[in-house]
Image (cartoon, rainbow, N blue to C red):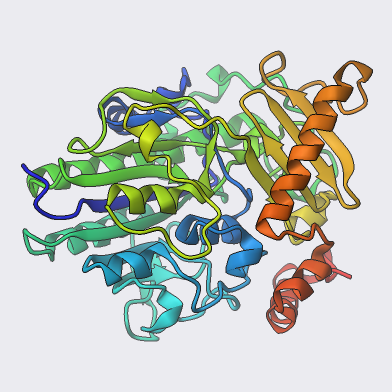
Length: 465
């Protein structure tokens, strides 16, 4: 097939899936044959990172190529700026049929909010989405009517059905862009079909060496590590089957060769690493994500991209592969040359938690900014206070914080200087939470999400002061 039309896009992303937990990334336990096949047929990025390891901020970055303070969704349940340039708008403007299926989480509060046709869909025409729900045996979504559609079954299967419906609605000469956002393996971990749980014996699951008890952490209440990992791995295998369904459908439609298929995640999951749960931390378990890109007409099969890259690079990369101009105000860099087999850029990835909210409050996680380079992880808290320094080559489980090591003064100083430069370049004032809210002019949106947060969490949390 010649490239007589622009390449199409199928963008698949899981929620809270760690980069290491795939067969193609070296896991000896997790069964992911379809995702492994995708990696074998495409390019596998081994050092891909979530810039903001939490749902809403990084999802906004995924769609805009901007850091959260520039797209507006600086915390969970904050809306993106309605007029921000996005990949949906860019592809729609270039004549693509655009579709979005699954979790959205970019339209503010409440979480059951209907997103009507118009600018708040950010360029997506076909719509089968829900702002945010993690009730996997009660699939729910909106189309173009404010009455939600509630169905039976396992949510990822229902969402994949909808994605396939979209693919089957296309004309043979349409260029299209389909974004499919699955909820798992995000908790509740045990909401996964039993057939997948039976694939994993909790007695044979080796727990990582940096796992620590999370005594007193309400996010770990009622959870046991081996059984939780069993369910988490099962949910990944369940998603793998849905990846297989989509790949088979592209083959059937004869669209596999000129379609860019991306598989990634919005962030990872701490799962007791260092005694933490969930996300919003600069540790590898939270920031390291899978990234696979396949397009037989454009990219070499079986290639590995080893340089650090991140979510903010995905929009410029996809637009470059599609032959389209970059969006105004993007912070990311196209990975196109490296994906095609050329030289890789080797810049450190900028990582951040610009606001302290929800689960960060529950665990005492501060606001922070940092860098993840080929070798080092470095993070600072407010006031440019050095917090963490890890040598990931010598210490892949990040067991020794070198921030006060006299032997690493030069490394720390160099990374601190680079971080200062990078923050200046993107206009991030590194203020506290309410300072960031004021910086982007989002006081009312923040007030609404704080009221909603108290309604959902009750006395467990107090509003940010």
